[in-house]
Length: 560
Image (spheres, rainbow, N blue to C red):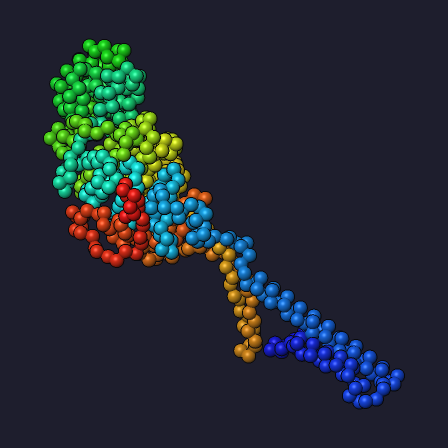
């Protein structure tokens, strides 16, 4: 008969005790009465034994049923995972993924333990401006990583704070491309056309000079995603390529610079004289002369169109005009980017914050040249490109292909952007997806963009959760029924991602569970805090009690 609400089940322990009592009564009845049982007494005693056995069996079955009920309730309260089993990584998971080994690149903390990535693939960090990328990610790695580095350095803080450490403690050659002379740092120079001069004078490289010029022209005047007015950009690039090859082979190497090309383009008389010289040239098996004849025909047959092409080419070089800061910085070379692979070298590209929007193309041009140089080098050293303000460098021509090939050459790119949408805007959805797929480590913090928060929530996945359901009945005095069911819930909702506390990050590492980790400012880590040079922009860093201690072996064998 079913129980009514509120009615309690009988106790199986009570049934066992009753059964034992009946057995004891049947066993000791003769001793208690002092009489030998007759046939009728034996019948009663047998009945008592039967009742005792039945009660004991009922008690045992009751206990088994209660145990089974507890197991079923326990199983019911555990998630089945049918709606998803997403979870954050534990320290054990990170250890299994090799993220606790103190080598490679520093990513942050999990439960106070430092995380390091020692893989060979690229990395991507997405965080808004002034949210701690420098003090929590970039500067720590410039202090920790002992391979060669190429660093884009808005404001010059990174070079000012870490260059001395990399030169003195790591014994690296330090080069600072610093056209604006920020903070009294060195002002080395690099001529982007230097590879053309080297190819023109080396028979082993001569066959690649035309491709090098084409790549330079495309980097100076990249093709936007909408591809409108492509014909005019192609015409402008043709003029740039022709003038580059002419100046590289005319026997006046000092004129093979971007400011000189700007001078030629800015004067009708000078460009016509240059075209005349080209038509008379025998360089590059007649290629320079052929290009000169094409330009001469355009000048004669369609001067207005040539003027449009020329104007587009000149505008691409406006930031390199001879009297500008960049004009001097690209008029000579103090650096060979192949040294990044062939020796221990640190290169900083310094640019004022207020010039990034207008002169960021210089960052992209030099970075593209450096990537090509290390890709061609036969050196064996590991190289890290740390590209802050990646989206403001302009479009890097051939980026997707480079990212695919570079890890096999010991070269990694760590790109820093403020929003993922910036990648799509500059490179288009296809190349942006390639950048994301080639980055085996993706780091996000201080997320404010709604679309990015939704994207991350989906990437984290769903977990199965229990929900309680209540049946209130029809009347106020009805008993309340309660039941459990399952449903799916995001591991983190978009709102939870946007409301993550300061100092919290999300890490996605290939072949590992997602990590909800911590960020720690560099001055809380020993010995990093003692390796810092005072920041010329923000002032000295705080003196703080270390929260993390790392041990480094010095050349003399002692720990630091």
